[in-house]
Image (cartoon, rainbow, N blue to C red):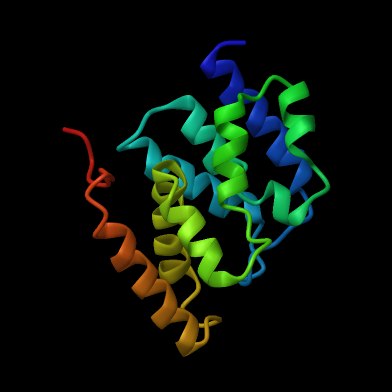
Length: 150
């Protein structure tokens, strides 16, 4: 399976898996996932990374497993990025887990940025402060390139 095939396969999996899921504003979750993916594609047109951006909520919100994705032809790298974005540990460990994986940090940056733009009315003040702090931490990581490629 080519990298392009992996991206398209993930799009199909995510669309089906999240067909009934909504964000906090009541919009289909797929809109957020696509926004993050398109934003990320401007700086990192890497199909495996973009597939992970699409699949970032799969392990948290569905019964889909790493093994299922591997059986479907999704790469190990993509599943590891998604795993790093899966919050199944205390928040401080989760944040470090993301920072330890530059690809996951890139996705999280765009995800947090989009949430702040689209959901300011439903976020609590403490969430907004936390999201902004997390964005600052990610931006301070010199391993990450987050500005558009010219």
